[in-house]
Length: 142
Image (cartoon, rainbow, N blue to C red; front, side, top):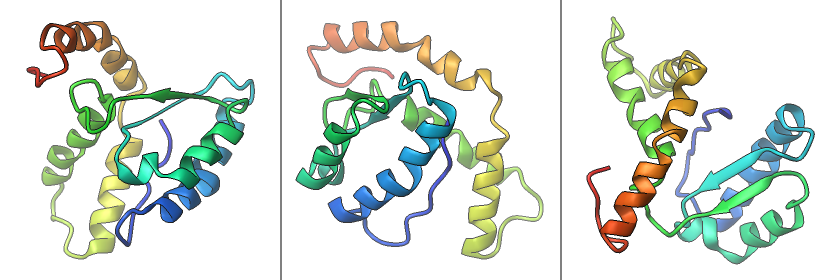
């Protein structure tokens, strides 16, 4: 998994482009120098805007980019990964008191996730896709 990035402003296309170029590209070139890395995003408005879309097309030889339907938590394992952070932070004592303390706690929890965590979530994909097909693209239990 890549780094946890703090957004200090509303995410818009140009800010998203800077995240892609500053963080995603370097992460992929270090950990997936063979070009076989896989990048997943939901197609929310900032993700699907013209500038980031063009950047992803220009870097298609550096890593694979999966195209997902907009706002699709049913098949987005990133949502499950993110949602698991909050209970881990709630167990910390003493609780974070400042935004920087909270960021530090979230980053620590993110880095402490077991290596197999992502693989376990990936293995749920066939069931998620089957449920989504049965629901004809509508909400599922995932």
